[in-house]
Image 1 (cartoon, rainbow, N blue to C red):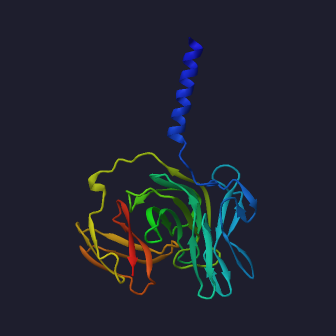
Image 2 (cartoon, helix red, strand yellow):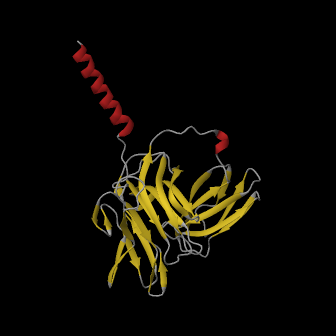
Length: 292
């Protein structure tokens, strides 16, 4: 009888463990597995232009385990090029010095938080950007809908491993994603050669978070889509920062205001989808903007 009871409890424990802890994590998010010193398994961080340019190196300065990733901004042909790492495909237009990230990993879950550990050594006014996108293919429009995004941005020098924790903002909560991507940029808006970041132990947290009504920012954004000019009205007069990112994760605009009625003018930007982060110092929310 005791053996049967113990066997039953063991099976229950295993089933519970699989339910509680078996959710999908970023492949090689701890950067332990490397194909060569410039290529972490599952990650893309190189572009081919005359010769291969590598933006990520294997580093023994890790938060946990043996290895971490070192993402480096490099000077190339008179320009400073942000270091990049992603699960997607890096398509670079060297004629116009632009890049686009496509694809990612198959993924159908809905994590609550995106976490990781980092060190950062910026030069000039650089900013570290770590983004995770959940998307779903829209067969009607033949485009990808952004289901959720989690964004971490810092400009501060950090010389010892520090954890970031960012909640996923679900822009289309009724949709189930089919693809996940993570984008790491050692430089945001102002790239400077020599800037580098150490990244380790990227994870998804599926623990539910209780959200109080007063934790959300009350705002009204219109029109969206627009020709680039967006009106945003706040319910409370408090210092709020609006930060706009491209789909590449680059910061293209930032402004702070205490006014109730504000205008975001993105008419000088190319048509496409951008992400607006609204931060009042207590909480952050992300909104998808479409410039037509």
